[in-house]
Length: 336
Image (cartoon, rainbow, N blue to C red):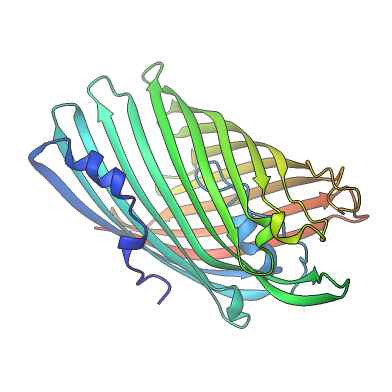
C-alpha cells in the first residue's frame, strides 16, 4: 500500500510541461527495476535519518528528539520505471521511483518514499536534471508539547517532506565530472508541532572521478540553511532553524570479476540558530559521523545481490553521550 500511491500527487506539472515541450523521435526505450531488501536496525527512530544520509538523497532529515526507541526488522520493496529517448538536444530521461520502509513490529514508523526525475543530456555530454522528492507522514516518534497553560502532553510527531532539486553536470575530462546542486524544500509537521514547519535551501558541488575501469570516487559538500516558522506556538520556545554543513566521500571498487565494494564516509554538523532564551536548541549543535560498507555480487546481467552494514554516531552538544546506530541489510536488485 505504501508503494501503490498515485503518482499524480508526486509529479510536478511544470516538469511535465517542460518535458512535453521537447520533441522526441521514435528511438525510445523503457526499462524497469525492482529491489527488495531486508534490514535490521537497532534504532527505529534513526533508521530513516541514517539511510537517507547521502549525497544522492536527503542528508538533512529533521532532528529526532527521542532516539533509542528499540530495534526492529525492516522490509524495503522498491520499483523504478524509466524512459529514455532522443531529441534535438541529445538524450532525454524520465524516471519515477517508489519505495517504502515497512517495519515488522513498530509499524507506526512504516512510510513510503517517492521521486520523479527528468534529465536532459546534451550533445557535449553536459546534463541538467530536475528532481522532486516526496515523503508523506513520516513518523518521528512521541514528543512533548507544552500547552499554553504550561502543562506538557505527549503527541505523535509526524511530518510530510518535499524537496525540489536542480543539478547541472559538466564533464571536465573523459573521467572527471563536476556537478552543481541546488535544492529547495519544505518539512511540514502535524499538529501540534506546526511551529516546527521548515523551509530550507541547499547549495553544493560534487566531483565524480572514474579512476580506472575498476575504481570510482564521488566526493561532495552541501551548505544548507533551514528556517522554521514558529508563530503557532509563541509561548513554546522550540525553534529548529539551523545551518548545516555536510561532506561525503564514496569509493567504489571492483574486488573480483563479479564482486564490487562500496565504502562511504559521511560527516554532518547542524548548528541551531534559535535566539529564544529558553529554547533547548539555542546555541546547540549536532555532529554526525557515519560509515557504510556495501558488497554487490552480480548473479547475471540483470540481477545483483547486496549485503551491507552502516554505523552512525551523533551527538548534541547539550547531551553528555553520543547516540550510536547500526543498520545491516541483505537485498536483491533486478533490472529488465
